[in-house]
Length: 400
Image (tube, rainbow, N blue to C red; front, top):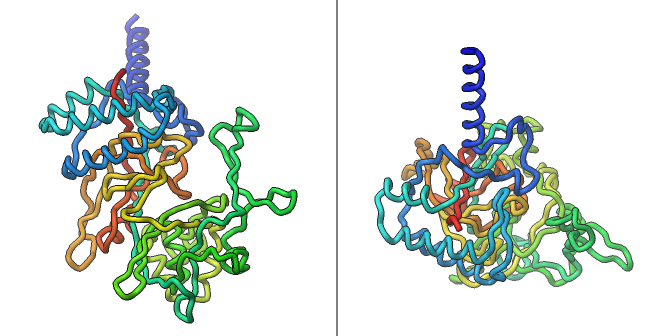
């Protein structure tokens, strides 16, 4: 009888822990649907805190509501196995703004969140953790006309690029689309980066927004998705993501690791740029390993994310749009760098804060990837370039 009771208690405790952690028993691969990407936390909640000022998040929330209010109130968002309307999400975030303005201490804020909100945990990668990386808004020199120095273009979206929503043809393709071009009566994949950069597939189509002096600058601008260009004579041009060519993103950092040119530990944006500057004969080979190509648009004011609202340094994250609800209120915990006056990272310390899912990216795939926007400037470049740390991601919404 004692053995039976011991077995029962052991099994019961295991089940409680598995459910409370939001785990899927035996899960060995990454989530393939929203239902697998998030699970509701029922017992063991994170310790909610924020290492930034609350006012910055309240402002970011107000701007995020602009996106949500553009939608039909009945628009449906998938929060893991549950669904909520845009109206419910709006009320949830309005409530959270008021919660922040009440100036509770950390203990009271945690109590209110656990009482008033459902909390969902990202299933992460196979080890159930989320890999956090960073992105920033780079600053490059550019010109509006081509010359002998500035000869590498960034392009606006071509007229012959079309995006086809496959769910219109079959229900099983819900959430899937392809990017293509029409050639006569044929629907073909759009041009790859190599066809555009080396094959001049878009030349003489008057799509050039500006010209940069280094193809690596162009590639990094593609990776970041937006940036500022200094045009001389105190003129600046802000550009942001418009569309991509539909080909899958392939990491040039991973390529350099695979070929033995860099180690996994030393790979960063800075080390990649240094390697390419020292090996100019390899620039085309390395950059064209990634067939994905980004098209831009001219922006007025701050950088915009994929929701067409301004993104906020330290408060905006990019997630896989196939798995996570856009515009969602989230909480993350990971690591952030401490950078000295010489621009060197002296240590890494705990990062814990509330953020908003306001962007996406070609490299951000799966329930175990998240990209944190660091803003602009040298500090942002260093932090974003070196951030590659595991952590946890939670999504919050007020209980109905």
